[in-house]
Image (cartoon, rainbow, N blue to C red; front, side, top):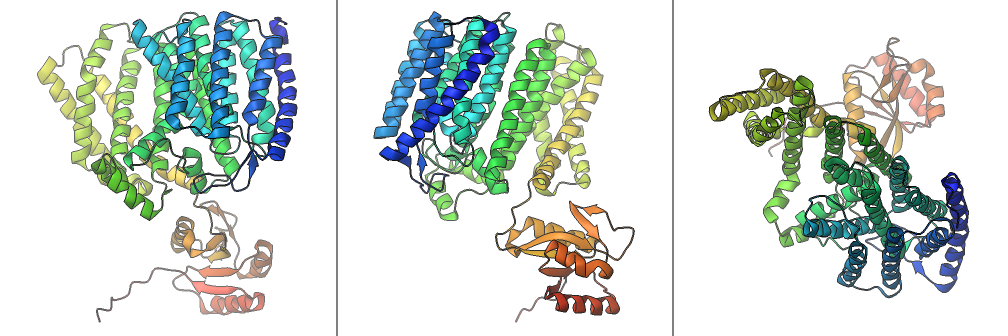
Length: 600
C-alpha cells in the first residue's frame, strides 16, 4: 500500500486502465453467457446491450482501495456498506427481486454505516441526525439508480460529483479520502468509455446501487473530516454536489405522483428523456446534464470560501434557474393521451392534476422563490451582510407576510393569466402592476402590525425592482429556451426557402419552426432588398433575389420555395416560376388570409 498523496493522480490513472480492461472483459463474458438487456417499451435503449458493467466498477474500486488507499475505520465501513449494495443490485440483475426487498437491503447498508458513527451533523439531535443520514444514503442511492436511464448519464454525473468531492477533500487536507475518491473516479472513467453513447455495456443495478451508496457515503467522510463546519456547508454542499440526480428524482417523483403513476416503475419521463423530446440528440441531452452537474459542483466549491449572504445568493440563483427549467420540462408531452386519461382517474390528487395541466401550481412555487430571493438580495444590497444583526430578525419576521401578500397581488393583477411561451415586452405592464400592488400592500400590512419600525424604505424599492426583473426574466426564459432548443424537424421534412424577409416571412418562419407537422425545414430567406442581404433572421440567413436563386437552390438542396410577400411583382413572379420549373422545385404562397366563414 502506498500513501504518498503526490501519487494520488497516478492511482487514478492505474484504476482507469484497469477499469477499462476489466469492463471489456465483463462485456465479452456477458455477451457470451446471455446477460444482455433486451429493448422494452418503457426503456430507452433500442438494441440488446451487455449488462453487469457494475461488476467491473466494483472490482476495480475494491482492488484500487486495497492497493493504494490507507485503511481507516470510516473508509472500511463505507466500502463494506457499498459492497452490500453491490450484492443487492447483482441479485436484482440476475433474479429480479421486488422493490421493497431492495429497500430493506439498502436500509441495512445504511444502518451499518451509521452504527459506526458516520452521520450528517445537521440538527444536533442524535435521533434526527441518524434519520436524516439514513434517508440521505438511501435517497441518493436510488437517485443514481433512477438516473441510469440513458447512455453515459449516471456514470458521467458520478464522475463529476466525485471530482467535486475530491476538490473538497483536497481543500480539507483529507488525503486518505482523496485517495479513495480518486480510485473511484478512475474506475468510473474506465467504464464510461464503453458506456457513453452508443453504449456497448450497461452498469445494471449492481453498478448504480454501488455508485450511489459510495457517493452518498463519501459525502459523510467530508462531513466528518471537514473543518469549520457550518449549517450551510453541512446542508447545501452535499445537495449541490449531487444536484442532478436529486433534481431528476424529485422532478420525476412529483410528476408521476401528480399523474397517478408508480414512482418505482420504469419510464421515459426523466429530465434526459424530455430534453430529447424537445429536439436535442441523446448525446447533447447527456452533455447538458453534465454541464448542470459541473455548475452545481462548482458552486459547492465556491461557497466554501464565501460569506453566508453571497452563498445564499449563489444557491438561490442556481435553484431558481433549475426551477424554471423544471417548469419548462413539465410542459413536454411524454405520455400518450390514453395513458394520461387512465392515470388521471387513478391520481391521488386529481384536482392537482387539473392544475398541473395548466402548470400554474409550478408558477406559484417559482414566484414564491423569486419573491424570497429578491427580498433577501434587497436586504443584502442596502444593509450589507445582515445574518448576525437585528435586521435578520426583521427579515425572517416579515418574509412570510411579503411572500403571501405578493402572491395574492400577482393573482389579482393577472400575472397568472399569461402564456409564458408568448411573453413579450407588452407584459411588463401587468408584471409591474403586480409588483407595485404587492409592495404597497406589504408595506401597509407591516405598518399595521409593526408600525414599520426599523424597516428601510429603500429595501422595498430595491426589492420591487429586483422582483420585476426576476418575474419578467423567468417568463422570457421560456422563449429563450424554446429558441435555444427548437422543435426537431420532421424526418420527412422538405427543405424550403422563404421568399421575403419581412414581417410576413418572419411569421412564416416562426410557424414552420414551431410546428414540425408542416414537414418543412427552412434553410434560408430570399429577398430583393439589398440592405437585408447577408443578415440573419431568427438564425436563418438572408440571401439575394432572383439573380442568385438557381445556384442557391443547388447549394442548399432546396425542395420548395414559399412566397410570403402579399403584393408580389408580376415580373419577379414570372421569373420565379421559370426557375422553379427548371429546377423541378415546388412553389407555393404562404401568408395570412382572412375569409368569410361558410355557415351552410
